[in-house]
Amino acid sequence: MPARRRAAASTSTSPCPTASSTSAPFYNVYQTKDGRWLSLGSLEPHFYANLCRALGREDLIPLQHDTARWGEIFDCFRAEFRKKTRDEWFEILREIDICVAPVYSLDEALDDRHNRHRGMVIEMNHPTLGKVRQVGIGTKLSDTPGAVRSLAPRPGEHTDEVLRQLGYDDGSISTLRRESAIE
Image (cartoon, rainbow, N blue to C red; front, top):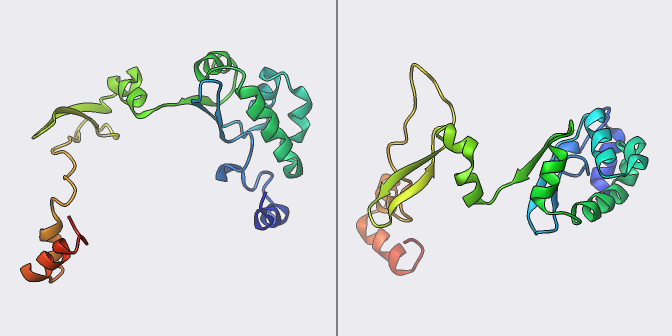
């Protein structure tokens, strides 16, 4: 742990001052045997204890908030999580009272059954690519449902318009484009 973080941790009144900054071994992501990732959020003592038991490392339970030992705990967790694939670990840990989730690739997130059911993945027509998948509206309101009305702009699509609003004339914009400062 960097010295400034150690100093902050030692002066804080919080029992776990840096856990949410991903410096804590029990609130982090771990690479698994297949090169994929698993996310842990075992901040509360009972979640952490259940995690240690699942990893066969009950000896680490009393060390949860001993920041001087976090490096050792990280090493242990990293070694353990490299022994199985992400999906194997998730199947084991989801049956226990532990805050855990697989870290999805973009394709996995777009294909996730829950995301599709919630309408979080929609298809839209792109002028050159045809049908493309895009993230839908996250907040679902019954009286005023949101809708995605257009695709994201192409790179440079609004550059001239924005530069004109900022006071650039056509000659200046042409110069910027010629010098490859803009697309």
